[in-house]
Length: 272
Ligand code: GLN
Image (cartoon, rainbow, N blue to C red; front, side):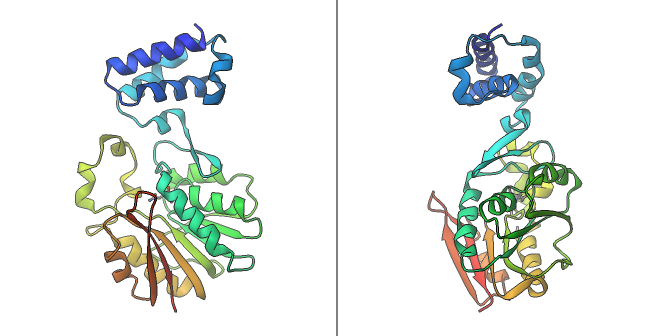
């Protein structure tokens, strides 16, 4: 079978099973299995392809598993991150938090930065790669997520991976910038999420009864771990533009920022 045959076969299978974005998923799958980028497909269309390697990933896609888990990687900001069962898939909105962090970081010399609830490390690793003079601590509690975080941080010399629980203060040098995209969905809303999200770990989504548990924890942790002229940068849910500033009781200045879709999405907070 050629790559082109494999693509047509995958497309046909996914369409028959009413899988959405069948076209894009087939292309990503075949290219990943062939070890090429999507943009190289045309060039390699007639190359030989071992057809049996398609079966298992196609079954997973038909079963509703997210494409990102099946191909095991996803692009975010300027890098590709390893992803899979047990870790949250990086979202495009979160790239805007990276951009905000890079702008804020210009205000500090050799900043010490934390990425709390780091997951894949997409935020912390992206920031560290852009800012060679920064020191970034990616803090994560889940053992499953840490496996991906370790791989994603490998070789990035200014990133340290820290296994830790952000509901307690952290034994790390005080930070100039704390960044976090913590779990922020209300526990009661989790069962009704889009079906693909059902494959992602509830630990990475569940923000407690009111969705604010981790913002409260970060509000306390900042007292011990953020320098007095430090900046807190958070991703929030689109309905949390009022509630998150309310729980950030230790911060006198709280700015809500919108994402590219015009939804409330980020908070920039300072003690004074
Ligand atoms: N910080 C990671 C991300 O933005 C993981 C977030 C999480 O697990 N809630 O993708």
